[in-house]
Amino acid sequence: MKTALIIFTVFRGHLKAWKRNKTTLFWTLAFPLLLMLLFGGIFALQSDKMDLYIENQNIVNNQPTLASLQIIELINITDAFNIIETNEIEDSDKQRIRTIIIPKNFEQDLDSGNSSIILIMDESHQSFSRTISLVKGIINEINLEQQNSKQPLTLIQKHIISSDLSRIEYFVPGVIGIAIMSTGIFGTIGTNTKYRKNGVIKKLATTPLSKFEWIIGLVLYHAVIGIVSAIVISIVASIVFGIKLIWSPIIIVLLIAGALTFPGIGMIISTVVREEEEADAAGNIITFPMLFLSGTFFQIETMPGAMQIIARALPLTYLNNGLRETMIFGNSQAALLNCGIVVIIGILSIAIAMKITKWTDL
Image (cartoon, rainbow, N blue to C red; front, top):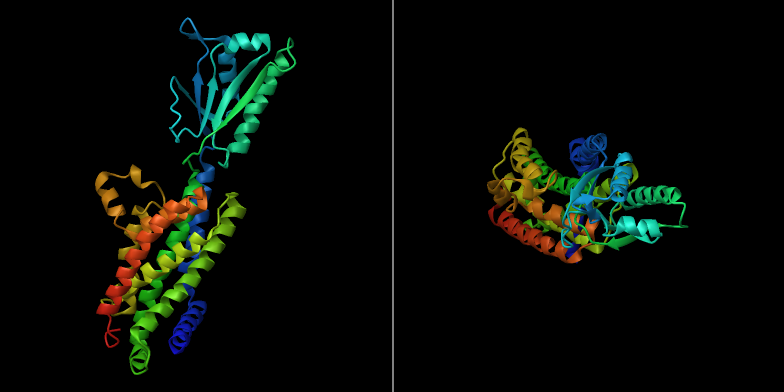
């Protein structure tokens, strides 16, 4: 009971300091929000055309029929798709998030009033409503031209589960990861350096406060701040960019894991940082490589092989992956696997921090 009260006192002290410190407030909320709005705006200015694979099976004498070409032309006129014509569709190819198949005998069936085209797409994707509306509009236009049948052309929908994301969907979980990392590392380094310079740590060394209680109070504080940051970022992302995020208890576990890992890293760095002026520089040395190599802005698989090896050694990589798996895909199993890796790194970081940290050195 006494230990819990001490930990809560440490937590409350850090929370009060957070409210008063404009720099910490910037790294916790303003920086990730500005980053998300900036890059979200850049993504929005880019072409909003969607990739659409078309497999035209309606071939006669090695030439596509006029009816199938008419379908492709009408799709092209909408100016909503980047049309990618293909001769072979693999059912397991999840990167082809939207595919139209024009079947064999399409032209003949259209004349007889019994034809269809097939749309294969992930119904959970945010572009589904727009895609289905455009395709149905094309079908209605074809049907109006066909006077010999009540409804000559119909749409058959087939559902797949796709891993394809819009850029902002991919980016938002990474922004939350950045907030957790920045607050944990910069906040811990800055606090410990400031307290050392002001003599606060020396006074704490004369009290019954243990390193364990100090660190656990710090982790609890960062967990709460992380949850606040995640909520604010998610709300802004939903309002401004209209993305749908899946919330589950695993997100809280991931945020706590991040609150365990990055303050631990900050505590380790604090043992070698002696001046407040050095704190930001030391934090940047650690955070900037993680910022750009942990899959925040683009997929790790697109990096050179050597960088991929480095990326897979960084804790932010697994925090970002875990948040993305649960918030975007709702994949709890994959999220828990990434969470486990972050927890292991966090426990090791805290253990090392407690081992090498001395009250007299802080």
